[in-house]
Amino acid sequence: MENFKIEITEYFQKQIDVDCNSEEEALGIIKEKYDNGEIRLNETNYIDTDIEIYDENKFISKLELLQDRIDKFNKDRDWDQFHSPANLSKSISIEAAELLECFQWNDEKYDISEVEEELADVLNYCLQMCNVLRCDPIDIVNKKMDKTEKKYPVDKSRGVYTKYTKL
Image 1 (tube, one colour):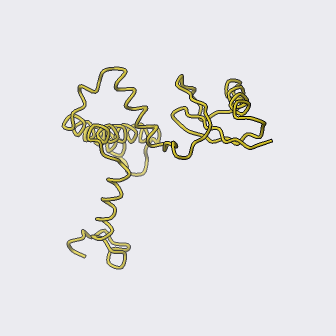
Image 2 (tube, one colour; image 1 turned 120 degrees about the vertical axis):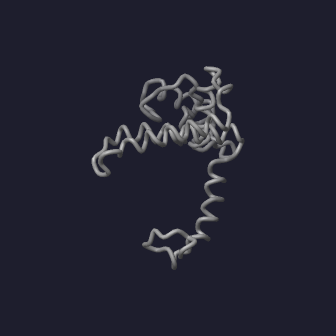
Image 3 (cartoon, helix red, strand yellow; image 1 turned 45 degrees about the vertical axis):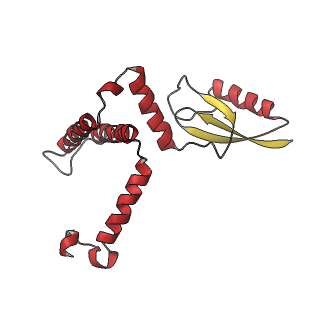
């Protein structure tokens, strides 16, 4: 008996080890368990579920899967035509203001579900803008972190909120 790594993709990915005699048998076992609800990736089932032999070179991050899902959502509705960088920038700003509205009258009392909804909208538009501009969100955040770490060295900025020009 061999061990096979099976991958399920449903806007999320999960690798499952299966002990059986062949790849075909492993795929069949996982498909049956998935179809019977014994294997769940999250609480929502999507139509585009893909079950295949795991290939570490083909693995897609959860972020990439999310970006693909957002992209598909927009393409299915033909909304890409409205998503210029300027329009997306406006949308990010509008949604950020709605996020701020969650804390408008009280910094300590807020509805976490409302905060999550607005934060999701901000992230959604940011990821759409990354798609439109063909930039990798991980790369651009890391580049910015590199710059910010230089501006705010730990020994000068620890525990203070002073702007880097005044450290």
